[in-house]
Image (cartoon, rainbow, N blue to C red; front, side, top):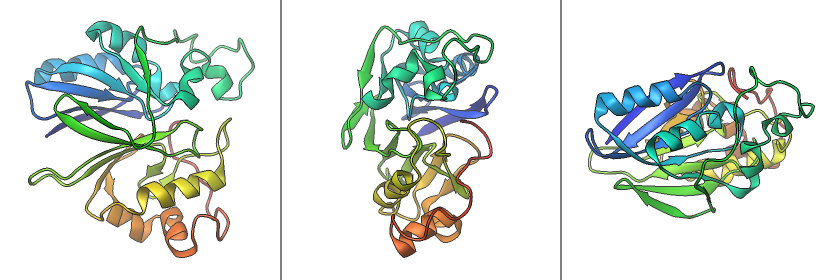
Length: 241
């Protein structure tokens, strides 16, 4: 399996291109701010053919390049319905005044073909199997994508802004909920095998086993349950929204 990832734009949001191998079809996950050029470079370098764009949530740092990327490759995008409004109204998603400039008046909107994700759905795209888990708390429509173990490749988990190395997504923007994100961590992350590779929306990759042992939030829900013990350390990623 091929995963070509790179941090893009002002928020350093990780964009991933995923394919069975070089020279084959691929999906693009979270083409955010200023990601279009990096996507084009990765497509050319690995001789890939994009077939879909998948979005972990609707914040502008994860969706800003969806329209140009979908347009360049004539592919659909997928997002959870609870975050769909953010595609055309990013200021509302960030709690900003309507009409306030956002990153130099970014061009936003929906691509021509926008489809909705549902919890528990398995997408079979580009020869890949990706299982969707609705994981609210960072936003109402946050989702993750999980790929099963394949041959010598361990399971892969695209966590978006639910889980980071050593931290979790912020909950102080509209739609965020500190108790709900703990419930999502317990329901979505804790059942995963320790060897599962976590590819987050920001920062570097990790594993579920490492986070189970060291991440204060994952340890909290493992020890006390999703409703116990309060929030502990400030739930904020080092970069991003």
